[in-house]
Picture 1: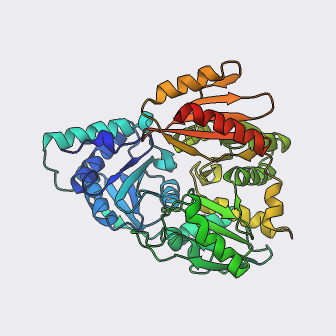
Picture 2: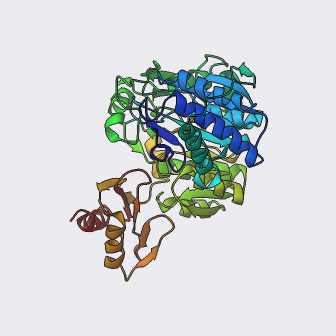
Picture 3: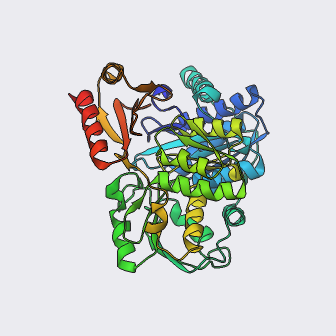
Length: 459
């Protein structure tokens, strides 16, 4: 019997196929989603669905949509798509949506990202726990699914999605740029030719050098997780080999985008956040910008310097999106390269962030390394994971060790120091891990703090 508590996470559904996530589970989740929409007053009569390139996607989509239709709702099937294409569909059609993807997870995984109409997030506190419990009850009861009563319509949205993004950032007048794009055999191989190339719209002054654009959910070249440095190696080499101006790497469902400069050096997501925030504040003076608590301190500093209002929030898309909605923020950024735009229904889209970087670079003559340095002020450790049996005990130990320093517990434990350095230690939502991030004004200070905390955590 399936235990849905193992696969329904804080923000989405994710598990291995077929032992954890299979067609009966997907069907029950479809029925529970429809029922929960109705109970919450979020029923629009129709649900829009899409899936990434994973082999298990189409069968899971069919089972899920059969479940939705068994509850009397209709379905618009957008077919293949990136996660941000599904958010576009949910926004433009004003329908709740379901995206079948396991993002950057290995090939044996699949999952579902759910949203209300207008791409509003569905998280544990906003309906996901009710969907989990409803689906579990259906599975435990052994009840057979009724015959689908709702209709199903297939709809192609790639060209409309691409056209919409091009209205948000105008790249037609920039200087010519050569761009290597590593799609990691994920959905970037489907969306990049449409948005940045000439597959469906007029050509831009961009020469795209494709890397691993073939859609292949077995990820034969490397995992589609650019957060891991090993997965950027091919992109970095290709950028240097082709003399490109920059490189872009997308994750499996293409909702995150990582950037490297002409030398192959990574541009931190915090620097990209500050760059895009600066551009959005030029368009919307005095606006609010969201940043999670482990982006660089440079982000709120630069936002204030540009006349904006920075708001610090927890890690995770459901928290960011909720803060976007409540504050009316125009933009939000995370250390993990998720970027959120009010102009995109408050949802995250790596493609739109990439377009802002291309525009910023193409509107001036210098290299990306020079542009990026304007937004890099501190030295960061990156995220360091430690396997820990008792997360609470270790957090308490670190809290006690730094008892004399400023502390807050917005998300895990953050310790701030008088010299501008800070440490954040937080528990994983899904694994027995503690995640450490450290930032400081100098490499020496960062290394000292990092090693001090790791000794406590791993000692």
